[in-house]
Amino acid sequence: MSDQPNETPRMVEVVKGKAKKIAGEIVGDDALRQEGELHEQKADLIGESRHEHQRAETRERQAELTERERALAEEAEELAAETAAARREEQNERERRVEQTEVEMEATLRRSAIREQEQDLERAVSEDERKAAERKKREAESLDRAAHRLD
Image 1 (cartoon, rainbow, N blue to C red):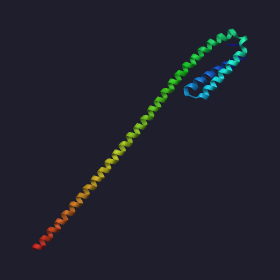
Image 2 (image 1 turned 90 degrees about the vertical axis):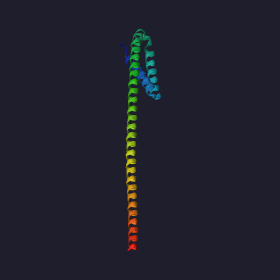
Image 3 (image 1 turned 90 degrees about the horizontal axis):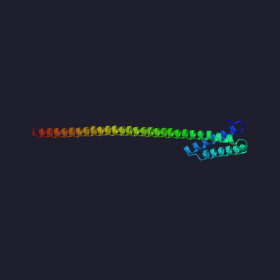
Image 4 (image 1 turned 180 degrees about the vertical axis):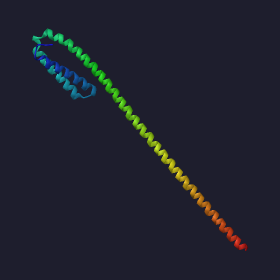
């Protein structure tokens, strides 16, 4: 690591910038991506102010930074993949819940329709039985009148 006091702030700004930029690209947040770019610009300014004093050290650190960037990019890709998988799983779960709700609603509607049909059938049977009973009563009254006439 550097003996220069400004190295740590520069690296912090670079890492923050890359992380925010990558995070901004992943989540589609331009403000976060731009904030990352600003952090990167700040890091560049810090580096330029010390450039003459640490030319050799800068090359060494650049290799470290490249590895860190690669690692951050790899982590970002892994995070993006995990996030995408989690979102897909959440979406699948929402779709399963919606489908289950639809199935339950359809079953409820079918049961309700069956109950209504059964009630309609019971009313129809009751109405038919009432009409049949009235017919029998009229027939009985008619037969009774005919029997009285014959007497």
